[in-house]
Picture 1 (cartoon, rainbow, N blue to C red):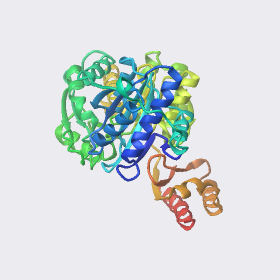
Picture 2 (picture 1 turned 90 degrees about the vertical axis):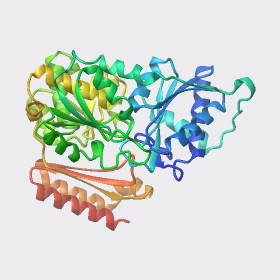
Picture 3 (picture 1 turned 45 degrees about the vertical axis):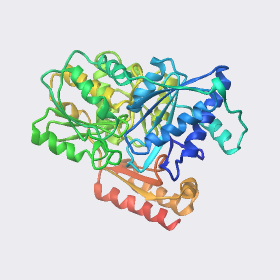
Picture 4 (picture 1 turned 135 degrees about the vertical axis):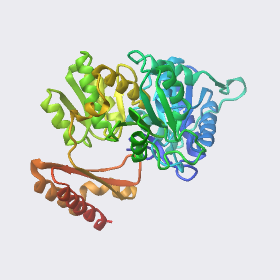
Amino acid sequence: MGKIFGTDGARGIAGKELTVELAMAIGRSTAIILTEELGRRPTFVIGKDTRISSDMLEAAVTAGICSVGADVISLGVIPTPAVAYLAGYYGADSGVVLTASHNLFEFNGMKLFGSTGYKLTDEEEERIETLIFDHVPYVPAFGENIGHVRVIESAHTDYVKYIAARADGDFSGLRVLADCAEGSASTTAGELFSLLGLDATLIHNTPNGVNINDRCGSTHIEFLAEKVVSGGYDMGFAFDGDADRFFAVDEKGNILDGDFLMAIFADYLRKRGELKKDTIVVTSMTNMGFLRFAKDNGYHCETTIVGDRYVLDCMRAEGYNLGGEQSGHITFLDHMPTGDGQLSAVMLLNAVKAAGCPLSKLGTLMKRYPQVLKGVLATPEMKAAYSEHPAIIAAIESQTRLLGDRGRVVVRPSGTEPLIRVMIEGENLDEIEHAVQMIIDAIEVSR
């Protein structure tokens, strides 16, 4: 990871770490590079989520882009995957989203896409950082060469119609409760579910700039689970702040994270003859229960490091069409160049309709192994050096030996938060909780 960009764009506390000046510099540098590559004036689409700082940062990145003669199409508040899709739909050369995904309102970030909707590569992000930190001189635009901004009012509808077209018929008669996380899905979910014929009730869909992801959405799905059962709904959907993550709840209140959902999607696609190479791309955080499901049912799994961009890189390189993370980033590459929570919702409805059974039945395709995940506050220096610290190495190796083939250990720096994450899963909950604590103690001692 670079000085600015992590596993999912640039992110930090808005106004403190992700400043107006930095946002302007990222916009300007990206526009300079793109102008050089294309040999002409580029166009950017820009979207944002609902946090209070998004307007400020949108203004800054727009100013940076226009200051060097590139143009901007403003999409307003809209899901991240909508920006990825609409970049190509509107013939733009790049896309920018102002969002910090599942984080609380004080954080914000910038995700950058190319013209095809794929996130920029590590190398492309490094070029942007070089321009910024090396203070490379640039020639500002002036007169008629200054970039201009236009607003497309139909952006939400253009995106929603595309997602709705992925449905296998309508779903009239199904009652769904959907948690919009006070985020971007608030602007699109209602229109989407109406087109699908669902009897849908939306909650947490009145954002005020500071309530995004606050005890709601995919990171606090226990509230949704209670409401689905008490309200007699057929299922519940939960999105995160920028609607690229998706969790579900069945009619009995069971929570289905990305691993359970990928098992359902793999089964659905293979029965339709649409799962390419019988393969699902997962990450090192994927539950052992999913890996056992795949092995028992003849699927092949490709495993990448954590980060939906790395899942996507593997899918593109090897020709796979289904991949995702336990966190709910799920990519259907035949339909969308990035994870899309509302597309995942449509595909889940398709799977339930095709199976002709309640969602709770589909949720039994895999069995979860007990898993403990904890984060340790860490400075950037700690995150960079943890894998070489003798005490941490010894603790990881010791616990790995003790678990043997009954479990596994994953320790990694977060790409989006100031944390080192420790994840252990296995057959015995008490055993893995003890193992997690032993490694956390070693990390704390290393400070």
